[in-house]
Image 1: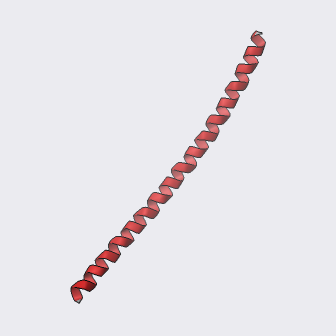
Image 2 (image 1 turned 90 degrees about the vertical axis):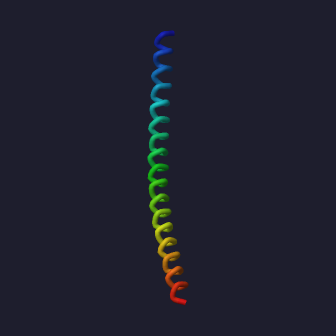
Image 3 (image 1 turned 90 degrees about the horizontal axis):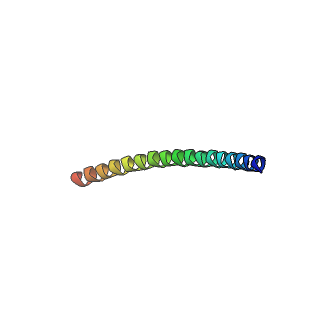
Length: 62
């Protein structure tokens, strides 16, 4: 019975380790995606700011 418990515990431990690894990989991928989206957002915000400035310059010249 002790042997069965040890075997069962070992299998459960391995399953949990694999699950942890998978979740860690998913987290890494999600964090990378967040970083990519933050970069895209910063570029778009910069572009919008440039376009607003250009529009203000055009209005000032009119």
